[in-house]
Image (cartoon, rainbow, N blue to C red):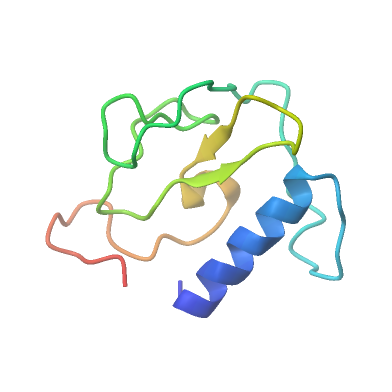
Length: 101
């Protein structure tokens, strides 16, 4: 994923979390599922308690920053691996030497 795609994705996720649907065609299929877990803490990517809302696995720093979204008036967040939302990872999940950019 290029930097431009990454920043476009983050902007789209913020719009979705706020309930806005913009002209971005990728925004329409993204939705928070009833099974997605809410978190009240906001640990840094790579910490043992930075878990994905969708799969429950740790979001490791080498793979990409966690994709985070939250409703404007909520005191919780959702965190996702990019691949759990259908995005291609920007580095190999198996190679610790890969850099995300």
